[in-house]
Image 1: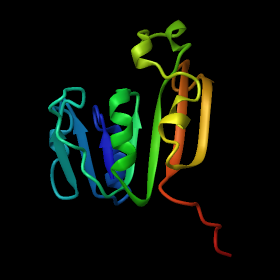
Image 2: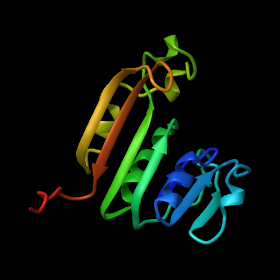
Image 3: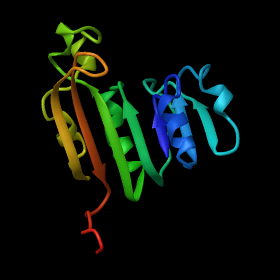
Image 4: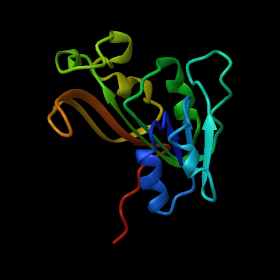
Length: 153
């Protein structure tokens, strides 16, 4: 699993507690460093520089929350393994009335995640206003590489 722009490691910790092997990536790894052992690799990467190393490939899952760097979106889809799952949630236009971010460069346009990850199979998608954990306007997508099979009986 890849926790991209992992921040303070909230999702990294949850994934580790759930038994996953995790690669946590962020430009500031001070909060992540204590997790770097055993099933957790911590990589310090500024994802927004032209000299950022590639994400790698073969991830069974990628989690991205509260982060947007549009040039990275194709690399995220390509980093997933066959059957891999993407969970992505971040702020959308309209959020500026509730608080940061205000800059449109960091706010998704309606349906933008659907367009960005059109090569994946969308399992769930939401966009709009939420009140928990705080009022915000968000876009969320859960998608997989390849077709989604029917559950077995």
